[in-house]
Image (cartoon, rainbow, N blue to C red; front, top):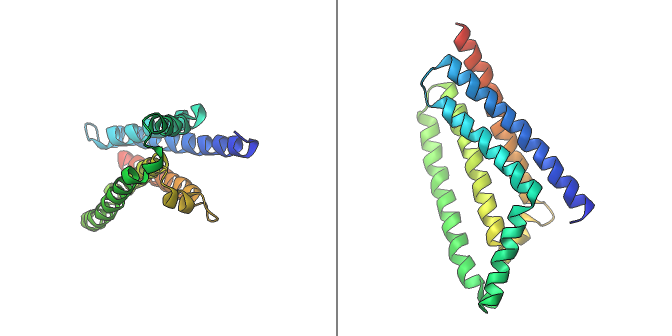
Length: 182
């Protein structure tokens, strides 16, 4: 791993931990403002997800799993024809994301409470990170060229989705704290 990759990994971990703290604060605020409501659990799970992302990044587990999958394909003499496996996976992911965005847009418009909208947007950010991780694991050449190309879409989605979740968590925590005081 190069120094630049290591520094980028540390930066990503720092971002993930800031988001995890914001989500934990949202969980605490939700628990106080709405005892027994599932929002506290949802934000706690979001915080745990970002801690997990940090651990994955620090241990280089994603790259290790990608390398393991590649080596397994080489052992089975399937590496050269891996695109036959990758194309359907990428197509399925693209279709699922498109469907999720349509459903998400409709559901978001139906949510009247600002807190529910913030929680929902945060969940979409988590979904974006899960999809990104799957796409990186599959390591399809056409997708890799977009993710790691000149624009570094990988970083844009990773940091953008993380920032969106963090902002939603912080806003949720602030609004829930106000509601708890009222």
